[in-house]
Image (cartoon, rainbow, N blue to C red):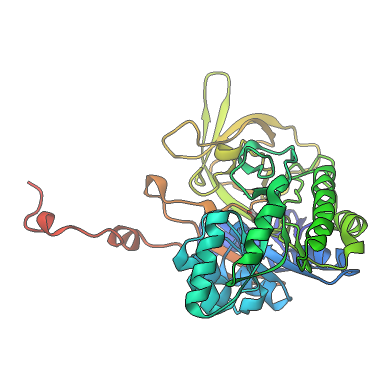
Length: 427
Ligand SMILES: *Cc1c(COP(=O)(O)O)cnc(C)c1O
C-alpha cells in the first residue's frame, strides 16, 4: 500500500494534490511520500522483531539526503556501496556503527575513509580486497570488522542485470570456498571476522530462492563455528520485490519474509541484518510528467511526454513495467485506448510503454508513473542536455523540494574550457 490515492477526482500524495506540486515546481518531477517510506521501513523492522536485528536501507535505491534523514531518524542503518554513499549517510546523520559497506570494488581510499569515519562492518567480496582492507587497517592502527559475502549459487529468477547469486556473477566468494577464505581472514591481524553476508539479487517475487540461500548460510554458520570462527551476525542482503503492476498478484510481504528468516536462521542466535532498498523506496515515489503532444502514427497513437529515459531509465534498461495513471481521475467506465508512451529523447529506446491502454489524454494532461521511488532519480542523467528533474518530499499536508532542478547555466558552467580554446571565439 502507498499514500498516492485519488481524492475529489484528482491524485494526491498524502494530503497534497499532485497538481499543486506540478504548478509549484514544473514537470517532470519525482515526488516521495514520507508516510510510505516509514511504513515500509517499519514493516521490515517489525517482521524481524523476534530477533536481534538491524534494517540497513540500501541507499543506492534512493540516496536523497531528505530520504536518508527520514529513515535514519526512524532508526534505520544504511548499506553503502561507495565513498559517496558513505559520506551521504554520514551527512544525513547516520552514525558509523549503523553503516555497512558492500560492493565488489572498494578502493583503498574508500576503505580508509570508512575506517576513519567509523563503520559497522565491511562485507568483503574477494581475497585481494581482504588483503587491501587488512593493510589499510594496520596502517591506521585499526581492526576492521568483516563478513565475507558468499555466493550461494542460487537462481534468484529475476532480470539478468540484477541477479547476483549465481556462480557466473561477479559477486561474493563461491560458498564451496568459504572455509578456506575465512581461514585466510582469521590469519590477518587487521581483520575481525564477525559474520556472513549474502545477497542474491533484486526484485525477487518468490521466497524460495532466499530460503535456499539462507539454508546454505545456516549450514555454513555451523561449519565456520566448528572451525573456530566467531559468527555473530548474518547479513542477508536485500532484494525483496515490489508489485510493479497494480493488477498483479503481489510478491511476498516483509512479514512472510521475516517469518522465513526466523524459521531458517533463528536458532543460530545471530544478529540479523537486512539491506532492503527497492521495497522501502520503490512504491514511496512517483514520477510526474506532462503530455506535450498526442501524435497519430501509422496505426498507433503516441503520447509524447516531457519525461524521458534519462529521467527514469528502468523501462529502457531492464524492460521494466511502470503503471502510468492520469493525475485527473477518469470518470468510471471511460473507454481506454492503446498508446505508445514515449519521451522526447532522440532514440527509440526512449519508450516507457508500448500499446498501453489508457483513458484518452490530451496535450497538457499530467500522468504519474507509479513505483518510481527506487532506482529512478539515482539513475537519472542529463543525456540530451536535459536537466536532472527535481525531487519533492511530502509529509502530511506539507511538501518541500529536496533537490532543485538545475538551471541551464549551472549545467553549462560545470564544463571547463582548456586554455588553448580560450584565446579566441569561433569564427
Ligand atoms: C542492490 C543491493 C541491495 C538492495 O537491493 P533491493 O533489491 O533494492 O532491495 C542490497 N544489498 C546489496 C549488496 C545490493 O547490491
